[in-house]
Length: 298
Image (cartoon, rainbow, N blue to C red; front, side, top):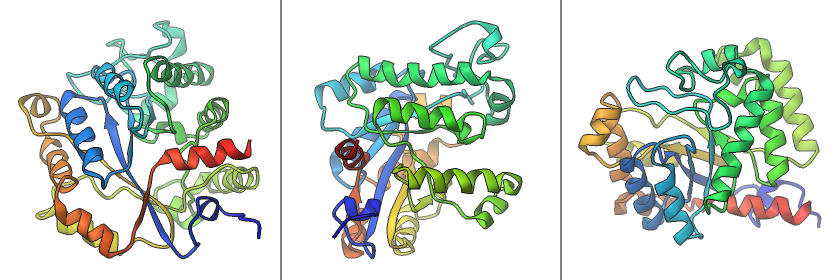
């Protein structure tokens, strides 16, 4: 029998709950690197993606070079959101590209980046980030998006093009018209839905579900995550979170979010979360498995 869906090509049944437990913002700080690799070593988190323009990228790359089994992708980044802790584009300092704000850093918001960055310059920057990760020893397993910026219609074709060039999966979630309307993107529904249909028809892997409700201070984050695990539906789910170890550095960079980032770290290095995933029979995978499916076909 021909295995036609991604979940079947990965060796699972369509009724299985396959989960990518994904760490975002790797490399944005030393605290995030410490937490990332402890979480991966603990064995519940499966993969993550690095912000290549960020100050601690080289530490991430050094760790990955020494330990090539880590499943790390590139968190394609066209924004630099923090007040006093900024990073710049890697590909150009030319103001005509629109990549940089008045501080010569990437824009603070997705809206500014979408409105100001030249489409071609954005594509060059995306490609530069992936190539730099490879050049520094990371076996790039996938690409995804920081702050959702490259999901904008003007950037999305380039994002998918970069994935094809490097033969890696691009994080691309399945969405419905109602999903888009709830996010204020109803006017773009026809564009996104047609694109998704065309991509899937052409063999591009589509993620069935995405869980993003992880950024906040829950009274008991371990119980909160176990509750979310229980609500996971059959198919492939991308569950993202942002662990970082509490430190003076982390508090200085992100005073508003340091606490919940540390709670993420604690949750994903504790036995309860591992027991919960096992009890619910979640099939945990990373993006390397999906990349190998893509490369075996193309």
